[in-house]
Length: 341
Picture 1 (tube, one colour):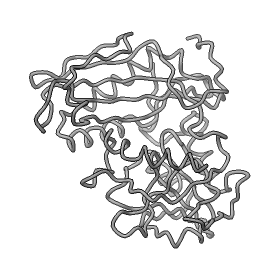
Picture 2 (cartoon, rainbow, N blue to C red; picture 1 turned 180 degrees about the vertical axis):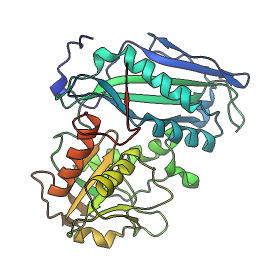
Picture 3 (cartoon, rainbow, N blue to C red; picture 1 turned 60 degrees about the vertical axis):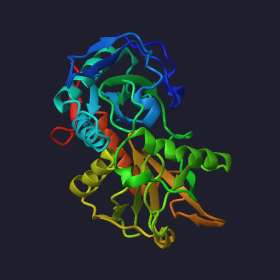
Picture 4 (cartoon, rainbow, N blue to C red; picture 1 turned 30 degrees about the vertical axis):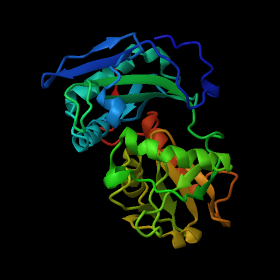
């Protein structure tokens, strides 16, 4: 399929309307079959559950063009499973995981002209989401829901692409009330908006959130997990019940251990350790792996030995291996790549 006439190499991480989106409705206790539509607008009652009580969950994944011209999606089964967990936590009906994957395939195939070409540095971002759609005024779950998938071509999440970024240790807490940081729900991300706007105003790319109980342990950023590399080449990533179970982070840990033969530790990471790491990075669907060069802790500057010029060598090896799998340059572990046909 011929690609759209878009300046792929200069795309930012923003919304561009594509031709089709998938829509399915839950009513009278069941989901309908769903369909593709060209209508990008949603009409809701003023008292819809999503508007009154933020009853909404979402996911994020990407489609890529491989070196040999195929269109592929990376590990959508894990997104389906995580969205099911998020829906259960917010008392929403689970959209069946097999139908989730089929819907992803449908909407990517319909928008294949918007999947950026190989080598452009861009990808097609896929956003499945679900929300309470009928009027709800008492504090209770909605009775009706809508599941949708939109797509949009995007470039790098952070300006500068693979250049190291500067972050700050936040004065705010990341997790939403009741410890729901481990799901992808609108209320979680709304909680972090003030913190990220404040960080940007102060000249930082992101926040580093600490645990709310002791403020001594590293958790995550507003939209990504952390990875750290020790001076002896070990991968360390924070363990906490309140951070998002990142699919990208899980994939990186597998790549590090099973493909690159690295030692991997998922454990509590204390703020006091930051000065001892050789490299640091943010990881997620949007960020992929974005290197961190400096961390500011309320006037104290922590400079990672890898520096501000380029990715550290171990982070670069992880990045090249992960993206090599996603782009079809390297053989993928079984089930990681779903081809769109």
